[in-house]
Length: 376
Image (cartoon, rainbow, N blue to C red; front, side, top):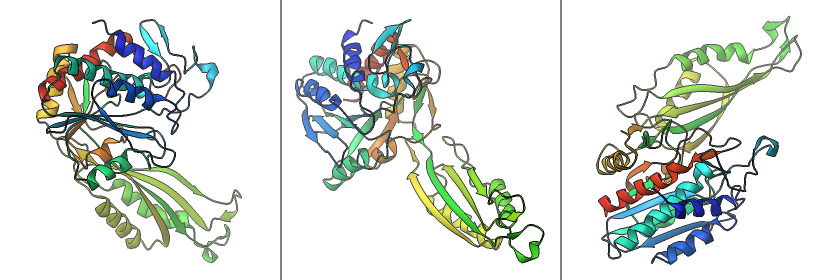
């Protein structure tokens, strides 16, 4: 397939140094293209974050493409073979920051829409794009705020395709139909500082916490399900001590995280952690941070449509997966009946010399077009 339109638009977007949350001119470029094929553009800017909600049509079903124009910083420029914001073609690949995550996928959204509308100017249903510039950053004023606005006016999405890079080895091999939730704890265990030779005059918080940690690490939080592995508990940092070899520390700081399935809840995990700490008589302060709720789209029309499109275009049998980190899908699922993530190979995301195969660009755009044709 020869798809210079997707490649040209991807290059235009990559050339914008849109390090989160600065969109530069990406959304303006997209808005102009979409307006030309009958989309109504609604700017939903909050704080320093730019968001657009673009829609064509007013009837159901509503198919939404979602993505982000912001990228992570390029890192040391010396490690790039070509400047990160000067898109370059070599060795059959397109290089540049955002090539895989996820400006090229957004370009494929737009060109797929252009071809579909040209072929079906009076299509049934509606097409929308939800684009933010705050996915790689704090994600406070981006997709979550747009979703709040949509909910407030009764908006509902029937099908949503998030263009995150999901493929493991070849384009189309993996579709994300859910993500685990993320719940972090910042625990301070209180003891009493003292001389290491006089432990009876001190209370070592490391020793106090050790039995509780052993129980937390061994706990079976849930069994997972056919889509999710069992919920996992991991300590990421543990720090105590004054730096002196002869001092029992007065406090211990422990940072930990749950990546949890739909079989567990935020409230349930918190309650169980507090119960273990209290059982072992730990004197503590515990601050929680809930950064992502788990979500799931069970196998159904959207996943089946994606699999058929991938098989037709790529000749690949796609697998469903809920692995990996969080995405903006965690916000959109609140208003989306069915949601998947489907994009490029994720091998080089956030790395120097980020890239995608040139041949995959036309394929992904075609996959999106095939899905529109079946869903609308």
